[in-house]
Amino acid sequence: MATAQAEVVRLEVAGRVAVVTIDYPPVNAFGRPVREGLIQVFAKINDLAIHDAEVRAVILTAAGERAFCAGADLRARTSETPAEDRHIHARRSRVSF
Image (cartoon, rainbow, N blue to C red; front, side, top):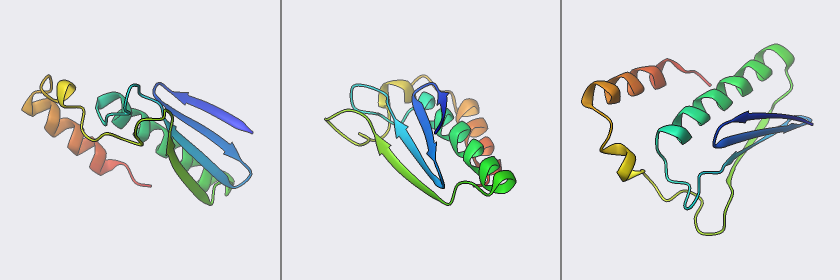
């Protein structure tokens, strides 16, 4: 079983199944750390699928007991400028899975 760490997003690969776990306490809010972690992890999964033909299924889950993902991290959202927001969305659109 291979394991990779992308800050608050973990990737575990067992055979042809990848398990992606969001671990951003207390409620796994979807902010920049989660977004960047997901981009990194899914890029890694994409590489595995293309080059090794290893990953055929992905399970997305979350750590913690309160929520899978509480939604947008509103506290962090206020710190992003419109230029940062555009950069994030442009970068996200270039990532293919």
